[in-house]
Every structure is written in C-alpha cells, then in structure tokens.
Image (cartoon, rainbow, N blue to C red):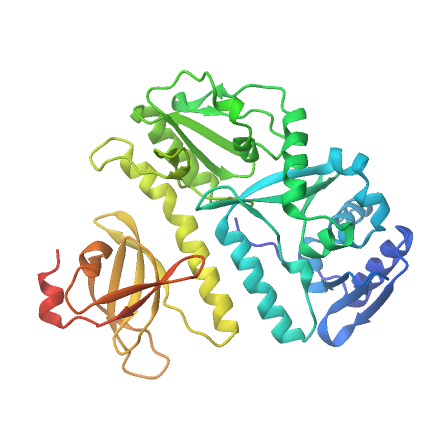
Length: 400
C-alpha cells in the first residue's frame, strides 16, 4: 500500500486543533506550539510529556469533523486526566494484549534514542513496555477508545502508577471475556480466529482455543497480522501451504506482524519452525518469513544510521525466480550482518558514494563454516553478526 499524501493543512491550524482538543478534554497542563520544529509540546502537571509531530498528523488528517475528533482522541490519549484512564472499571474493559515480534519493541526503544538525540528532550512516550511470550515474540498492551486502539507506552504506565507485567494478566482476561467463538476451519483447511475485532492475533494467548482442534500432527501457529491468527497441523502440507500464502500477503499489510510459523518444542515453548525441504509446504512458509526479516533489519539499519552507526544492508534476491533474503558484505568493511539465508559478497564502488559491486552470492551456512571467516553474534534485536575475514576469490569459488 502506498503511503498517504499529506493533506495541505497549515501547521498552525493543526496546532490550534490540538490545543482546542486538549482543552475540551480537561487537560490542564502546559501546551506550547513550536513552529520551527513543526510540533506541539504538551506536558501534564504530573510530568507526563508528549511531542505531537504535526507532519505526522497531516498525513492522517481526515476530511470530516468527526474523523478529526477520532484522530485526535487516539493521538492525544495519554494526555487525558489520569483518574479517568486508570480506574479498574475502565482498564477492565479497554485494556487488551497485543502480540508483536520482539523487533517491534527494540525498534521503538531505538527510535526513542534517535528522537532524544535530535530534540534534546526525554521522549518516554516512544518506549513500549512488553512481556516476553517466547524468544521471538513479546506481549504489549493496547488501550481502546471507541474504534481506535493505541499502544500503551512507558509514559502512560508511569502516569497510571502501574507496570506492564501486572497489567498483562488483566488484559488477557479482558480478551478472554470478549472471545465467544471457537477457531473455525477456512481456506486450505487452516483454522483461524473469527471474532474480527482487531485482536485475533492476540488470541494465541488463550491456549484453550487450540485444544480439541482436529489437526494432522501437532499445532503450528502463525500470527501474520493483528487481525489474523492461523493454526494448521504439522503434517498437513495443504493447510501449511495455504498458511504460508496467507501469511506472506497479510504480513505486508499495514499492522502486519510476521509470517514466521511456530511450533512447540520438547520443553513446550513456541519456537520458529520450518518443514523439511522437499515438502510441498516448505517454499510457501519460507517465503512468508522473508518480509518481516528484511523489513525489521532495514528499519534497524536506518535508525542506527541516524545515530552515526553503519550496519550492513539486508536485501531480497531473486535466485532462479525464487526470492531469498541476503545480507550485503562489502570488502574492506567489518559490517554487522543481519541473519539471512544468503550473503552477498561485494567490492567497494569505484567512486565515493557509488554502489558496491557484487562478486558472489553464497548460502549463510556455507560462509559461516569457511576457514578464516568469523561471524560473531552481537546482542542486538534483530540479531546482527560481526563479519570478519572477507574470503579470497578462490575460496568464494569453492563454496556451493
């Protein structure tokens, strides 16, 4: 989907609308329009601070007055008076869980570093607290107001005087109360949640929904979109192929999550899973995992670039008509590579600023075992590997 073109609403008009909306909702803190930075600064008496970026508002600005009211309700939710938001009666209805890849929360923390470095002001509203679900996914919280949903950030939790671990159980129980339908069988024999309320992926947190399903093999689960939870049997190639096809499409839509499939390991933990090569479902599930891998790695690279740190690019290659994820390793550099299916070896371009010149493409596993080459993992999310020992041409030629 192409990005929306910003509407031609003057920044001063946007700022005035923000100030008027806050006043009407009972906000009694400081509100300052900063035209040189295209933003409004709002600070509550308890110290909760939010920067409202006017270009971002312009991109979403609706045509109707009702639409404007709903947009501002969502954008300024954390600034409303605390008692109305923090009461148990409100939280027991409006607070819900949401599953995201761990990369989502790591990128939010990195984005906060970038904004704080640029603005010189704390930005706690950009940190999104979470609780781990497994090694790949974490549970965050969202808050509903009418049809709008916003993520619960650190500033809001602080204003409530609550913590994410303590609220997680309440959020899951709220989701359980509003879940009235079992999983239903659909396309290709894939089971899916059918509430269609924008929270179906989070229903993975309700283990009772997976009980009693008639599956061929063990449950395999995918949550490619906030509105989509998919379940198939590990021995059902037809259903798994359909799952991969749906995951590839859904994960690339707005509010997409990840097309990675998960299956419980011997310890009972949900772990990323891929069927054996040669099975009819393998290619569909391999493809569905690529968009999130490349997208998160590139978002990470762009944010680190804003902090003055260069990371290696992650790209999608066509190999015999089949897309493959690949990390770009340029000679004379010691890059941090995102884990991918392939590594592209390249020479620096002839002129400063020119594109590197690819010279070889090899599978990650083959490169990792090459003598003299070291791929050392770094504690980053998405995980990166420090690449050292760029192989000589004869060594590259011998790799399969």
